[in-house]
Image 1 (cartoon, rainbow, N blue to C red):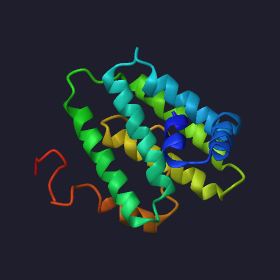
Image 2 (image 1 turned 120 degrees about the horizontal axis):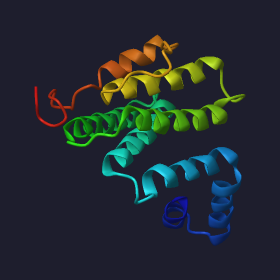
Image 3 (image 1 turned 45 degrees about the horizontal axis):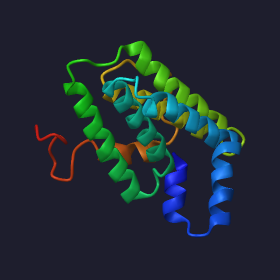
Image 4 (image 1 turned 135 degrees about the vertical axis):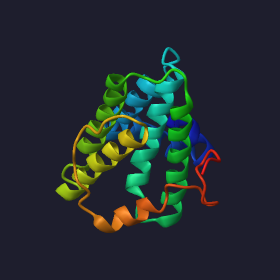
Length: 171
């Protein structure tokens, strides 16, 4: 997964090899790779399951760059579009599968953030996961409140597209 990206962005082969090793040897990155193979790349998964996993992956990125307004807004628009698309599918994944996708991703992300950032960030990761589950039409799993109120105000402004309508064109 990372090999193509590394190859495209890093010209020096030694640097490429170093980064590729990181993607396999650094536990947090390796676990994310394993998760992506299981839920996104495995072609036995349904389109709906892959879509949920892609939305979850975008949620992780949106949480990381929540303070960088442009990247955050762009990711939120992608999340909103994917959630709208998921809501229109005739065959949605069962709630247990969706919770498994999200819980595994949150567990991996939690292992990564432990020791690196305050406990509030771990709570924020769980809050964002719950928010995503609800946005996709499923029940929340963690019940975690948002420890960062100022980030909530950023998120609330991103529920619609830049045109002010639902991302798929409905008011």
